[in-house]
Image (cartoon, rainbow, N blue to C red; front, top):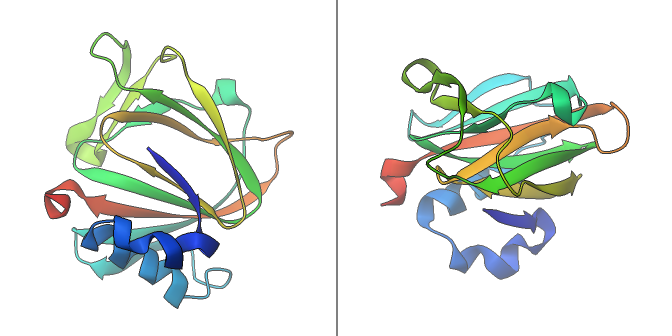
Length: 157
């Protein structure tokens, strides 16, 4: 898992792989406040963006999840949210396995889950070995606009 702020990207980009650099460049090239919600193609199934608007929810209403085919770059355009984070362990109890249909597997309360507070301009990069619980409210439920870039793990090899 990597946590950062887009304003520092120009100092850090050389540290990242080409597909992550391409994802972040896409964020910088678009007016994220006016992009329509939904899927935006960047490089087919290897890299695409999902623009989302929602009201954050209490932690107990959100499920911890992980992916296998994609790394997530979760970027907060406006608002704030908490994303729970834990290292994936083999013994986590699976609540629902949607890997075949949606590349998502949901877990019941991972051990040692940390809370990451993301505000406007911040991003978190979550890999398949990272369990994350997105869309949790920071103080009370509030509107959030977020872009989730899906970066194919095959392109990162």
